[in-house]
Amino acid sequence: MPVPDQEKFFSQIITHILRRIDLTQEEQQLFLSLLSIRRLLPKQYLLQEGDVCKYENFVCEGFLRSFYVDDQGNDHTLHFAMEDWWITDLTSFVMQTPASRNIVALEPSVLIQIEKKNLDLLLTQVPAFEKFWRLINERAVMAQDQRILDNLALSGAERYEALLKKYPSIEQRLPQKHIASWLGISPVFLSQIRGKNAKKGK
Image 1: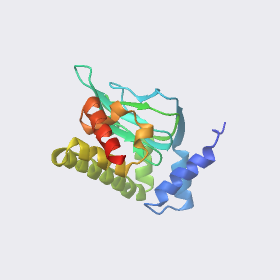
Image 2: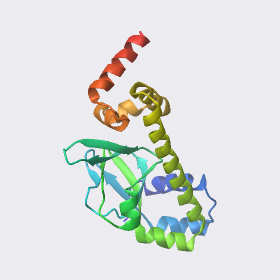
Image 3: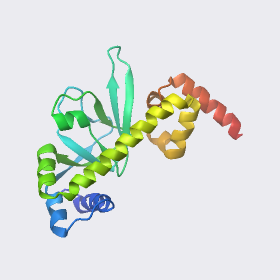
Image 4: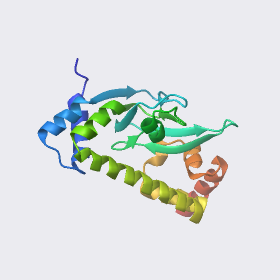
């Protein structure tokens, strides 16, 4: 039975792919045949720590957060993902080992998923996808490196300003406590930064 809006979502991911690699119509159809669509409600988990991550996930609609809970019960935001982004626990997915993180939807979300066995098949049958995944993973590594450098070189206020400049809608989509966690500062300190910025804006 067809999924509602399946054609729209499949068109979305094909557009995303073709911005990076060239595919024949046959290769596109093979790719689409290996995908599934999943919908999540707000606060619904895509992945829970300890489970094996079985899918790479492309976000068609919505907003998700990846986080780790330490031994003291503190919640650390690792990543977030919005439309046209991918999200997974890469180590768990590649190694098929228990996940070290949780991934939860913060908004009603629609994801396109590819299972590991299907991705392995795709990489064998359509070599161009090797380039696609290399480009995606390179971009993720560069973003992570920049985040590490920013944490070393910038103040909390500077990191917050950089985040807002890069993602202007982030405050409407990610709660303040999770923004603070992602920045590596306390919610109280973030409130102080926002208060100072509000005074400057007057």
